[in-house]
Image 1 (tube, rainbow, N blue to C red):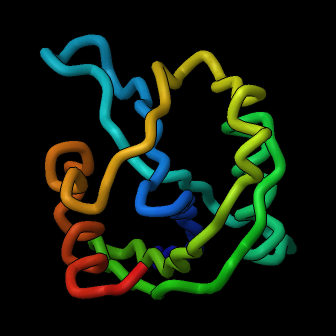
Image 2: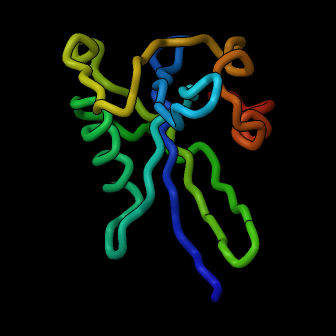
Length: 134
């Protein structure tokens, strides 16, 4: 059976820094957390822009703003096809003190572009961002 779904990714930028969150993956592995950008699956009937804004609010407990679509991607894994839209987003600086992550997320931090390889383990994301002016 062939399956297609749409994901959105929010790269939240403040000056020369980008917000990453640490998500719990599995407590049966040595490093159970991974750092990532905001990420969500588009629900049936939901517009991708609305999904992105919902994800920021649900994951950070603050309102976000979409600045622009940064890039799109497409991955095929067996019979499953993932189509994605990466957005460059922002949050108001005064909202930072209001960020509250859901339980499955350990922490959040601002990192520089040079620190992406140190935090972001997904090589596809790193390749997609390579050479892009965010």
